Length: 268
Image 1 (cartoon, one colour):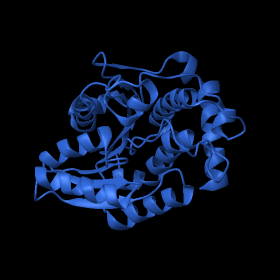
Image 2: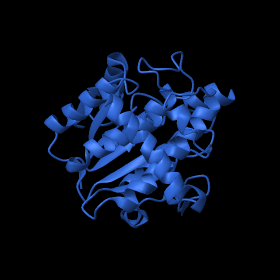
Image 3: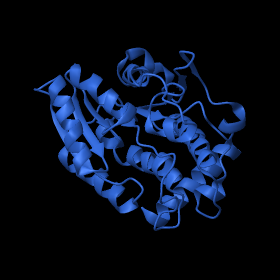
Image 4: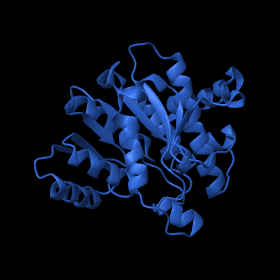
């Protein structure tokens, strides 16, 4: 069955590799990127794989709240249904670590924007939809003061904290949303894949990104994933797991969600 699949950050890296897989399978691709030139290049690549593939292009800088809001509105206006949302876009190092709003760019792109898009696009996803949130094996306890822009932390700390944060809110929304909501899953696509972030962070070439793309496709499309709502799939070991109690308890999840909602109230 043909699916409508939105992939954020789909112009390079694991996002593009996943888009290539989906295009080869004949799914309709909603292709998001930050650069019009890179979007056009990615579309060209996908059409060499499947010249008949349906592609809708969406340009937005997810570090800018106004552009993220506009992206959600455009998708809602353009599309009647969305089967899969892959929140893949992410940053590790950036020349602009603090946004114009005074927030940490890593938290905005890796945590806030995907949370906002998930909520806004829920009506298109419905109960049969699925949300795949890209996490990582690198996870660290979240400093909500940094998330709120009230303190600054280094690249690795911000990245690792953002990847635990997206896993935490995936679990929280899955547990608190109605049965009419889409299923949500967090994913470690694989450690040290050959993405830009791995090269920036660790100075290594990394493993084949197709490993991560195949994991995204598995979580996005396989029927078995439906019963793992709110869980985390670790592609390094090929297993699902639930959120550890220290991060799933009401105090920890409440503190994180309060901080995220505060950012949304202020800037979205």
